[in-house]
Length: 392
Image (cartoon, rainbow, N blue to C red; front, side, top):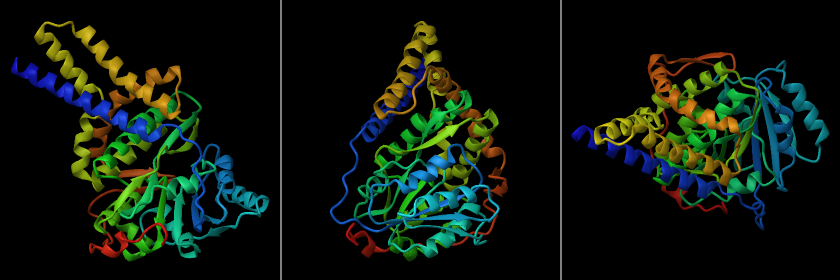
């Protein structure tokens, strides 16, 4: 009976945390009108690394030229001239001469991170004090820049947006939506609410002086993932990472099961190495362990386990479906199958994250081993930076 009481308590606490996180994300992601342009438009440089062909790449890169902001530039970065995305970029630049844009080609080998190496030349060339790094598969809405800038506070070191999966081409892409949207986006909003906001490399807004005071963009080579290094750099500066309200879309297109699994394992391994003590609780974040605990407790209490599980799962996944509806995210009958499959895979994913330090990113073999040489992120604090407002 004592074990049953503990199991029931665990289920109640886990469900309470789950529903709280859903409520927080629903509030942050509710649909809003377009963000208003500030009276004084600040100059912004947008850096977009390209590497290969992503689904809907023409549409996502084209969105860079349709932003409702009068003072911005776009710098596309490619490691090689023969990258298949380069001709697309050149055509878009030629067709949108009303927006200052350029393509820079070259590979600075300053880190083990190919994306960071690709971005360095763009950072060095950026003309403005406000700099956005945005992956090539981000679909930018018209008020993209305003929505990022309005989240900047006096204690902000970076404003980020996680990706929201849209336009899935098959069931496996639908499963990726279940990972990205109502799980990972929700978890990040919950983390930010309790004061532990994490950078997400999909979209990151910086003020140049904050990064330069921490060692410059090359200091982001301190971790295999530039967003993990960004998180630590910002926290060491006594600043915070803030998240944009209602994240930006990433059109997914067609995905294979292997694609989805490899991507989730890669991210899990990066989280395990970069933030080990926060990765440990990920084993129990889904519905599997609370449901198991509930079934055990129901049997001991003499309550029908089937009925208890039906009520529990309806509540658990119903809350996520309600979140997707409020936020305007992807909803389809396939999501009803994708959500339980996602949760069943979470314990396996957690174990897989511990089995190896290696992964492949866009054809580049990489490792997240702690044994590799690391750059040092400066650990001094910059109190003056905290006091500078958005007007800087």
